[in-house]
Image (cartoon, rainbow over all chains, first blue to last red):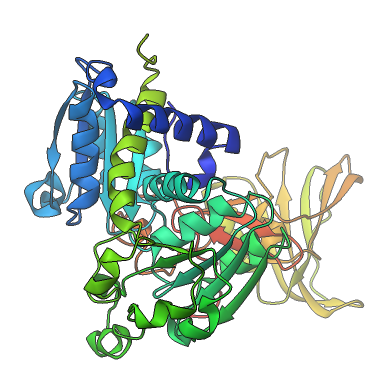
Length: 307
Length: 142
């Protein structure tokens, strides 16, 4: 059974196919309103989420399917001590496809090993978030017209930011990509991303701590939130949470077509005044997230495009 | 010098770093075998000074891949009719199952006790392994 656990589970050809389908859905979503009639999506969310869970549910509802699931671990059998493996065996009997978010890294992979239905990783701890990456890629391609030959700045929590890890892994497969990794020392990209993704492919990258100095060279700026829920020590979170706050003033040196992305939710790392900047693309990412999730579920379920 | 009879048929695991033989005994689950097993500790070695040796008697089938992870200098001799019929040097296994444990507190393996601890070789030159679940690199340090 095909699942999506890691962004590299999809080949570039498959990603392009999903993005093409998502673009087609975006042009006329109503054409797709019955493609999943009778299909059921289970959303197994062991960790709070607004965007991702509702995005998955909206995606399935848009296609005529139905949804079931839970929104916190407290309202599932996990609170009784049930393992992820047992839960997915049970859910496989009820649903056709499943989206799982879990605070523990590797939980969706564990589930996929026991599942009879496709499992989609909807975020596992600070590890990976492949469907956010699909939304990011769709938005980048929409705004820049390409996924290659780009200098991408990633800013904020690069250590625990799962969307960052997934995006670097995915973009590193395209030609002419270079990364500017902007973070405080404590929140730098995990070593495995540097050692096993960037260095072997000889992808240009630099690690810096000053956002404003890097701004002028960027084609895209991907901002992230410092995530309180990933810290075991509150003092560390408090010390680091406001390291980067993007304002209109800081954008003065940015290229006129340097789009700003953010996986959301934001706290205060992007000032509200930036929302009116034509380069702010983070709410487009949200809309695109629904379309790519529709496209992904169609592919995993083997559903044909409407005539 | 302590004498252990030569094997007619069996396996000799040689050049084990001194002190590591009991770990290997456990990793290979030799306690579950009903054949004759000799563990020799601190044997004299011209190459290493001291070494451990394990001799397993009989025509037994054991997955020896883990030995490459313990030490690449370990050698294995397969013996039949009192003669060495094959001498094997060990390479790093692609996967390690229930040999080492993930220490990442955010990993699924920390809350699901029955889960197999599986590590994949990610860098043979540097002998680095990663947990297949959370991708954290294994570090022998506590």
